[in-house]
Image 1 (cartoon, rainbow, N blue to C red):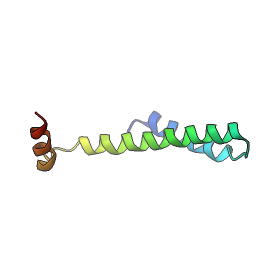
Image 2: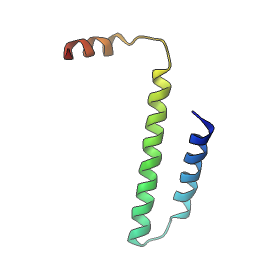
Image 3: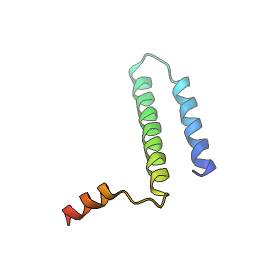
Image 4: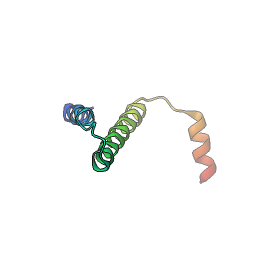
Length: 67
């Protein structure tokens, strides 16, 4: 992952720790930031998975059935 991506995720994690208020707006904002971090982590896992050169025969077979 690019260093800017990692830096952005770190900043979002810091924002979550700052947003510990009890009011509704703060909770909503914290939820949005936490969801963004989760999506970034999911994207990171998927991109790391796609960079290898190993063929997953089960995925290949499933994709063939859709066609």
